[in-house]
Length: 146
Image 1 (cartoon, rainbow, N blue to C red):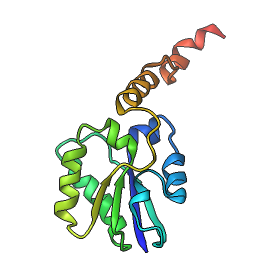
Image 2 (tube, helix red, strand yellow):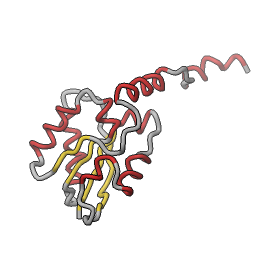
Image 3 (cartoon, rainbow, N blue to C red):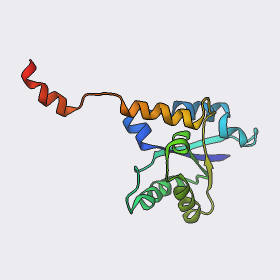
Image 4 (cartoon, rainbow, N blue to C red):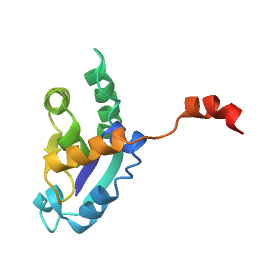
């Protein structure tokens, strides 16, 4: 049985509301990078964690603590979700840190089947982050308009 963990981008999950639906659907349907597992081997999702955010000096260390939480449950592979693959400038640094700290864990870059290029994905995500939205400051400043 393949015991799998998934690492997602905290910007995608927390700021943009990604629920990992595509990752989970393709895990169940054995598409995307999950098609590489033997067809007769059951896939067991151990857990999904998100990145601790773009790193400071402790970025990789914070990530490794989260990865450890999965390895304690006999995870054999950590998939860096497509959001990490397409968006994270620290992906390679994180991959090396995980492989160095957990040599028994396989790091797989990607999860679900890609329907658009990574460049188009980054462009669309950038537009989402840059759209006009209200914040608490706007509400406070609008207090005199009621």
